[in-house]
Figure (tube, rainbow, N blue to C red):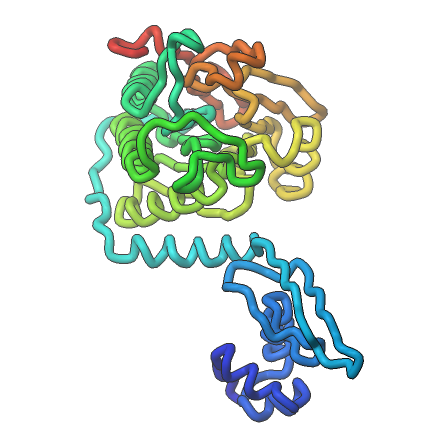
Length: 377
């Protein structure tokens, strides 16, 4: 039997008075496939045998159903409670991202020029950029808005590229929270914490894309190959997804650029005897990350000698060596916002580039802070 697709309405009609096996034969579908669809419809609130006929929109799932029956056992009223189906929401969002960039222009390839060091790798971890964040200097000591964020991040990247050796390969790691908020409302996606935001969501997206693209272009001027990773953060759970998809499309014709598109909150990059794990830091604490790496990349773990986790989230510098692995968190270039300032957190603002030797691990690093950049805040 050749499996066919059927609409939800066709599936509902076929299941009306039929078993799953009978409905599958009627529709020309595999029984297991139809059973999967039936389970999905039940999560959305459609299960007539249980007097559930009020469905919720795609992207949501039923949290609970309360049905009131009369003395004859017939339904008299019903409460349907729904909640967001996060897995389905992510599927829909990724599909819309792919569709949105399908016909967009792409970057014209540029020929690499010069000689490159193939025994070294340069990493550019960008800690919590927070484009779209607004910070009032009179309250927090330093101003921060979209224009300052763009100028400082592009300037810091250019300065670090200038200081870095001309390695054949480089990795740009946006460690998450590149976008300060994730929707038209300036709140964190899960907790709903209200945020101080600069301008509109669309403008934040425009500036973020321009700044991140400039970081890639700066790296391409120095390195032959550039790998780009946009880590998922707690402020931009969906923003990091569309940013990855957009850059993957943007540089699809440029063989010198590769973009990580995994939907996982954990990313990895293997180079020689080095294994780098990248995680924002909001779902797994530092002490759990070595075990995560050893499990996720068991073969790479066994074949490497230098293993690193690069994280963000906490906005301050922290580095701890665990058995077989070093976990490090990086500062952000943004100053502390109102929440951090009133809470007494005082972290330095800087960005680093790290140079790894193919056999011997980290051999150098450079640091830049906003005060070093002309015209910076």
